[in-house]
Structure formats: structure tokens, C-alpha cells
Length: 247
Image 1 (cartoon, rainbow, N blue to C red):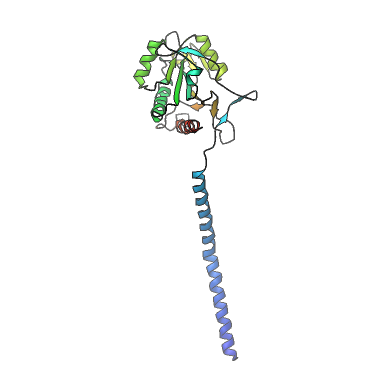
Image 2: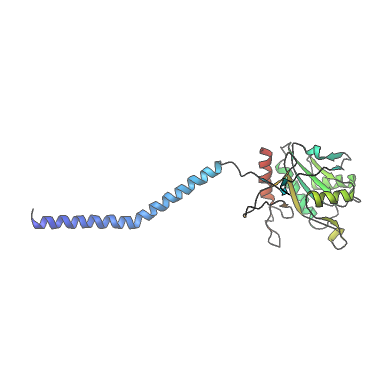
């Protein structure tokens, strides 16, 4: 073979090799990145179809914490107890009708949740007053009507003050106390407890794997967060109610 032709062929091989090398440097990383992105998309699609993460139980001394036995009068002067909520998912809060601070926000958030689950016969609310001497059934009925409470399974409960405080502190580990220094004369938690159909207190876990236990009821979805930088938890509460309703 002539030397010129051989050299020409070598040069052609070199050019082809250079083109392949340049192509690899420029395009292969993009292809790999695209494949990785497609893999993430596929994973996201699979995650969307995956079953929601189940809610955990709140443990006390190794046992699942259950709502203690209670029996109080509601806004219609009807006795309400644990059996009233048997087979229902419900929220528990402690409030008083003359509260000048967090209670109106809490009640409005509960009304929002009530409206979200208006079509569910398996959802309810139990609101215990911590000022039962003033909050009679008639007062509680007017309070509910003022805020637009329509759910027949939302009971505003009143009765013996000591029993209500014991239920809050020992049953739910939620603050409830008369205090001259507190606005309105009473101090209490602005948290909601979520109870399943069997009467167990349930919650999701935080980013560290610890149970959230309660849900912040003092910040609305529209507000987003309060002046302390605390984020609203009404959105995740609605999600978790749906999970329990589906169980």
C-alpha cells in the first residue's frame, strides 16, 4: 500500500477518535444526568402511588395512650362520654368562651377542619371548657352558633372543673389551669389532640422520628406562621385525619 494512503488513513482514524472523545466529554455527562433525572421522576411517580405513612401511637410506660373515661354535658344538655365517639376520628381541645387571646383562632381553625370533613359521618370534635362555672350549656351553644359550628358530632363539654382539669393534665398531658396572671383568668395549651376510632391518641413523627403528639391550633393555614416563627400545622392535621378515617 502506498505510504501516502496509509498516512491518510491514520489521520482519518485520529480525527474519528478526536470526534468521539469530544462527544464523550460534552454529551455523556448530560446523558448520565438526564438518566438520573428520569430515575428520580420514576421514583417520584412510584412514591405518589405509595401508601401514606401510617400514624404512630403515643406511648406511656410502654403502653399506647388512650383517652381516659369521661362524661360531661354538652351544649344541648346531653350527656357525652367516650362511647359517643366510638368508631369516630375526633379532635380534642381545651378552651373557654371568654378567652381574649388564642381560643378564637383555635375555634376558627376547628371550624375550617369541620368544613373540610363536612361529608364524613365518622369525624367529630370534643371541646372541653376550662371555665365551666361560666360556660354553661346555654353559653356554649351560643358560642358554637356564633362561630358557625354545624357538625352534630362537635360537642362543647362542661362539668366539674376539677374533673376537666384532671382529664387535661393526666389524660392528655395538656396545660389547663386557673391563673389570675393569665389573660382572661385561665392558662391553657393551644394544641389539638388527634384521636382514632378506637380512642387512641395518634400523631405523625417529626424529622427526627419522634412523635409530634399534638398539633398547633393557634396558627391558621392562611397565616402560615405566627410572630414567633411557629408554622401552622392545620394542613398536616387534615392530612392525618384523612389517614385515620381510611383505617
